[in-house]
Length: 282
Length: 292
Image (tube, rainbow over all chains, first blue to last red; front, side):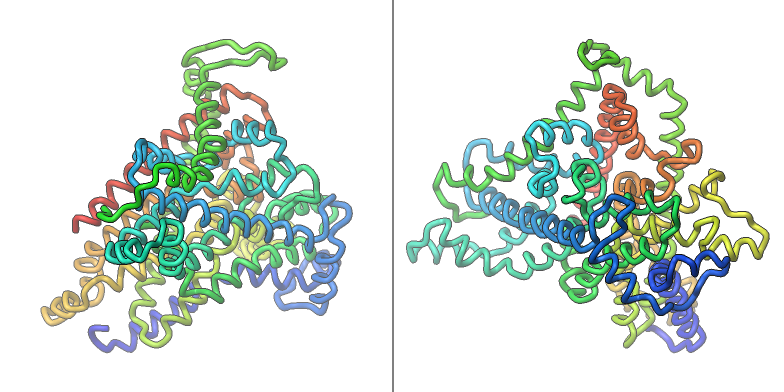
């Protein structure tokens, strides 16, 4: 701060409080709605404070779900989302870190071509190649499986570049020392590179977990069996079915449950989250 | 560049194999298929395909629906970018004045990043629900009859708000980082020269923040064009009367619901070209930043 201006400080606080309120508004409304019963919305006045049905509504959704919508219990969908998010995050990290290792520490024919192939994936988000990718996955018999939910999404140019940057900053002396001590490439990778990239892996994991959990279009397309519905994709199906018979309290309870894990990760691991966000954009 | 290297020839390929296999099977091959299909036309039964050259692209160019979708996408992207970045910059400037409360406010502002676009859509859709939503209730008091199911501008407003809301935290974090890198000495010097806070903001902070702003512009446009599928699908489904039918939603709809493969593939190819152009812009900027 340059000079002391109490008026401006007050204004800044007011702006921030208003900002926080606007940002929190939709979640507050959803939370309030999820603690009431269906009849509370019929009266015409919208409840603004939580009602007494919180435990009842959430327990019902986790355990049984809305039978009329054809969606499984929210517990099942959350489990599917968790499996998908973990597979995507771990898969991306695993294949990217080995790719970066190959590209940085080896010289081999067609190395540049391999690098460009990986780079191109950045320009082909799933939304632009959606129909042919769906056909490939269908031909491979991967519809309605965890493999189909995760594998087509785990190629990652961003993660490969991140690890490449990290490896380039690791001094050559370490590699030389390792080689003099008789370490082969895989031993060097396991005992030196992996421990040195630990915080980068953790930061990347936070970002990728959120990315995986929040997938929408892809799970919507390739899951036709309700056993594999993920919560983010399932919520829309639930809202559609509920349209005739308003059960907003249950849809909003599901929405709260759908955002709880990734939001908890961001708030609980804020430092790693910010690091991951900044690094993946380099 | 590394001076010390390992000499194996087979090992690097084994290390690259999983990534390259996934890239070929799920990225390059489908992309090539999209390009191929964009030059073909299937008959009504999907048995015969004929090579039709550029006629799928010509058909798009002559299709009022596609041109409308282009226009809707442009308006949508600009509105989301401006709204989200403007709001985030305001909050970042305010937080930049804080000393002790920075981390509290940051925590309270960053979490929407973690909310899925589809869930953000559902939340705002509920708030703006014409019969039981909170906002129409208040808008009714001031005499505005909100209905995003029938009004085109209301529907656009809804998807813009829902999409911008989710992106605020991202922009906020990058603006805060950008503001912190503006040297305090410059602002102090300007203050000594008699420049007030507003003048300092526009003459020192804004120019020095321009790399961050430019980077965020690209990221936000990419976000609005490609990552908002969930918002659209969860709220308006492209309606009413195509008013919120952005390009990505149209590719999906024409391909999966309309089963018009040639047209959908041609649209995919156009989208790829847009992504490539945006990526090139982004990387040019990154190079510039390195040269600073």
